[in-house]
Amino acid sequence: MRINKYLAGCGVASRRKCEEYILQGRIAVNGNLVTELATEVNEHKDKVTMDGKLLSYENEAVYYMLNKPKGVISAANSRYGEKTVVDLIEDEENRIYPIGRLDKDTTGLIFLTNDGSLAYKLTHPRFEREKVYEAIIKGKIDIDDINKLKKGIMSEDEKLVASNVRLVKMIKGNSLVHITLREGKKRQVRRMCRAIGHPVVELKRISEGGIELGNLEEGQYRKLTRNEVRKLLTGK
Ligand code: URA
Image (cartoon, rainbow, N blue to C red; front, side, top):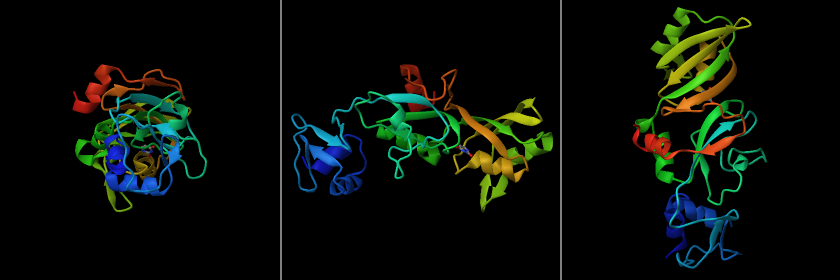
C-alpha cells in the first residue's frame, strides 16, 4: 500500500499530514530514509520508522499517565531542544504523544497514548471531560470571588467559566483551591485567577475524566489500568 496510507493506519496523522512528514525526511523504510510519496510499503514485512521510532500497523494501543514536572513541555517534539513529556517515558517502542496540554510551568496529570481516536475524543470540545486543578493563588479568596469564577469572567474576548471552585485551606496567607473546568481554553486557570485579582502561584492538574493523579511523584508515570482506559473512552 501507499506509504501515506500505511502511516495514517499506524495512527501517525492524516494521510496529507503524513505526506509532509515523508517530505521532511522523518520516515524510513527498512533503515532507508524515504522522501518519495509514491513509495509502497508491505505491512507484513517492512519495518517503518518515524524519527527513528518503529511504527506498527496493527498498532497495540498504549496509555500512560504522567505527573508532568515544571519546565517540561507537553508536546511530542520540541523545536528549541526543551525536554518533552514524551522524553520522560522510557523504553516505549510506539510513537506516543500527549493528549491535550499543560503549560510549561504547570505540573500534574497528563495522559499519553498512540491511540489517535482517544486523543481526538478527549481534545474535541464536544467530548470535553472534567478536569480538576489544584492551585495556590495569591491572597484570600472569598465567596464573591468564587461566584465570579463560577458565573464566568471575560478575558481576551472569551468567556471563561469554572464548573466548581472550592477553597481547601489557607497557606501562609495564600489560598489553596480546587478549580474544576469543563472547558480547556489556553492558560484558563491562570487567566481566570488573575482576572479576579488572585494570580496563580502554583498550578497542578490532579484529575481528568474522573481519573486521579493520586500519589504519583513528579516525573513518574504509569500505564493506565483497563478500567481507567474504559472510563476515558466511554466517560463511564
Ligand atoms: N490552566 C492553565 O492556566 N494552565 C494549564 O496548564 C492548565 C489549565
